[in-house]
Each structure stands twice: as C-alpha cells, then as structure tokens.
Image (cartoon, rainbow, N blue to C red; front, side, top):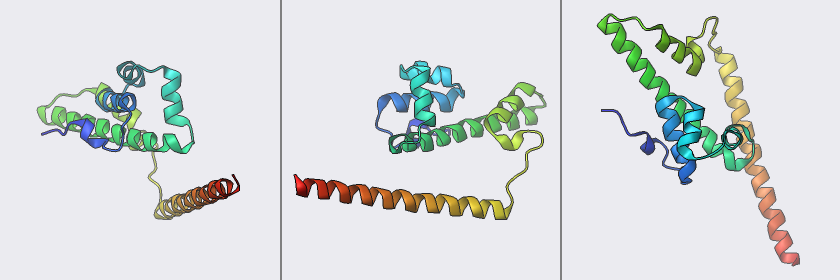
Length: 145
C-alpha cells in the first residue's frame, strides 16, 4: 500500500507549501505544483533556491518529495519490465529526477562522501553558532532598551 504523501511532510505547516510538495511528489512538475499551491513560478523558485533559513525546511522537504516521485517511477519501471513492456519515457523521467540513472554518472567515492559529510556537519555547527550569536545580540539589545 502506497503511503499518502502528506504524511511524509509532518513539519510543513504552510498549506501552500504542503500543496506544492504533495503535487510535486505525484507529478514531478514544478508548474503543476505551482498551480496546485496557487503560487507563481517566482515564488516556488524562491522556495527552492533561497538560502535563508526559513526556506531550508522546504528545500529538505522537496528532496523528500523528489524521492517519493523517484520511488514511484522505479516501481513502475520494474512493473513494466516484469510485464515485458519497454517504455523509454519512464527511463527518461527517472534520468530527469535521479542523476544515478544518467549516462556517465559516477557515484561519489568514499572520500568524497566523507568530505561532504564533514562539510555538512561544519555548516550545521556554523549555523548553530550564528543563531546563538544572534540570540545574544537580541538579548543585549533588549537589556539596553
């Protein structure tokens, strides 16, 4: 039984963002997701590409939506392979949504994965320290007021 995509985004409380994520996980189309959410392409682009902290949760959820889509496409490819049908369109869709299906794709080495993991950890520590610094500045400003 396929799980309802909405349950995959428990931290998303904005109804427009949730509608966008659910539709994207079903169709893989940013245009259809915009329409379902009632937002402009510019708004969705900002949600997907803006580096401010308020967009990071959405970007993480969008990766979950993309994986839901890829999982469904892979299941369909498998089903069609078992039934003896060949449908290159599904392969192209998989290539669009999952780079590991693209020609010439090289998986990252163990060293590259370790470097990426260390970089993510360092970024998280920097982000946490910056949030603490901002909180200290706000407390200091309140004391002066």
